[in-house]
Length: 296
Length: 205
Image (tube, rainbow over all chains, first blue to last red; front, top):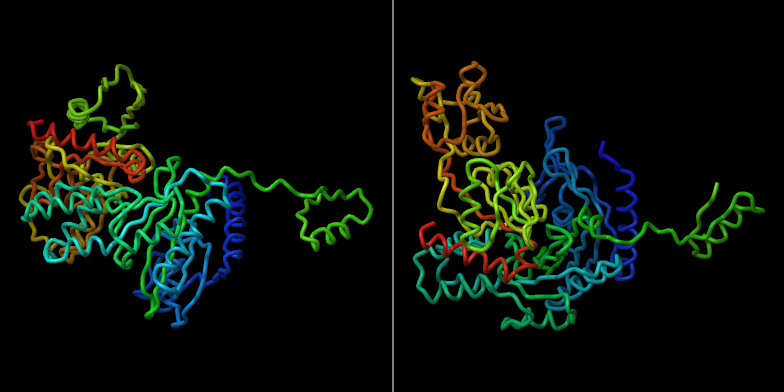
């Protein structure tokens, strides 16, 4: 058992409540998918086990589970809160959203806006959202595909010496170096500039050099982080699902627990059992939408 | 900035290269493992734990490639440092030199279970791995393992225990590690630090 699991649970519940409210306001539907899925190449993470000569995964990554269960519908707005197992017995709680379908350029802005308003709902203000583009790198690698793996490894590790060792012309290395160190608010890439302009937030930066290039993302990738936590708080990107443009992100709930300053909700109307008809009063208050605390 | 250095064989050279490049750290003058020095903070950790400190928020650290690969840590690795080179190798008792492909079912003692499993899996061979916490050379001598996968510098410890290096698993060098978030929040400062360390290396550190 985890030390102090119930206190952690109370904070996770408080965070989840704010996130659920925010996503409901944005018109997103919570998804509840099976804890155990038949083993499938499309599913990421989770812990594999065998039962009656068949392989299964317990608690796989929710995005991959949504992808595997997607029946081709477009215009879906989904969110989830779930524990994802790491292949063993440990799990991490994740909150994530997926927007499937929608017009390129607006779809991404909607998802990023939800990310911003989710953090705002948790009263987390000291965060940054870095956005980058895989297509910018694809363009830079165009014509030198034989070095693609080395360049992406250099990017992943942020080790430019790996690029310096390649037999590339000086001006190409210079171009890659510029991308490697590009971090700012404006860029020549129109699509990204439009997304940043539409977001209209001082928390957003364009960063080509420190974003993780994951294989299933197609262009926009992003990461959110806080100086108060040593690892990214969340990350996401855009992809295509059954011919539909899609975009999503996931928050690391452990990270949110660390940087969430809000108190566990104490603003409730007390209902004292010594009062006349306390439970009738309690039911009436709840029916009216008032949060209560029954004091025994 | 919080900096984590490994105690042990890499410490002196790690401290020197960082001081030559950027910092003005003094070594520990007592048994304390953490010291505030000016606007920076120096932590001394076991080499195996350095990536954990960096992954969890220390801005930079130095430790061996063997440790970083074994831990599978999520951090930036902008530089390989030019000292303390060694290798991770498979060693067997003297006179025993099987083909790797014939080692199915062998028992291998190691402090590096992930790297060992990955090495043998790449050869299509399944071995039993005994995870040790040090003095791995003892395991074949005591008869509980057929061989070991361990760090080799000169080979003298192997020879003293009747073992012979039979296959190199990987070359090992110290790496400069950078926390993923620190690279963003201290973008200019860390880029400058990396550039200064590169300069020291170029000048023959």
